[in-house]
Image (cartoon, rainbow, N blue to C red; front, side, top):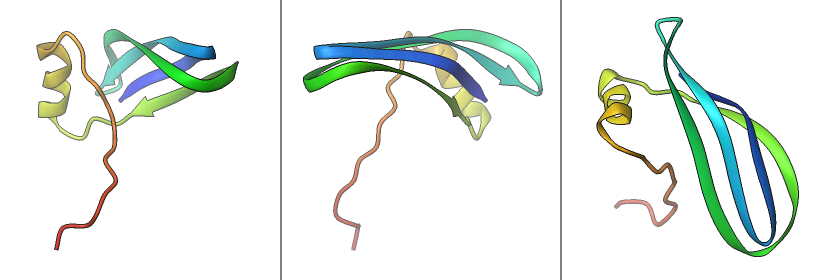
Length: 81
């Protein structure tokens, strides 16, 4: 489980976010990570939030160490037929 307990996001036209996290494997600390991002558009304000990412297999955990960074997203579109 990769846990980011506090991420701060702020923006006024252009925005950014940053937070530090901890990877837990078998109940023990296995690494430290950070998250950051930028955005633009109609936005004003600031917020803090947290999230947990559940890595479901060893391949997913290995991908964290094999890359300098990774991106998480979702694609919503027409269902496969």
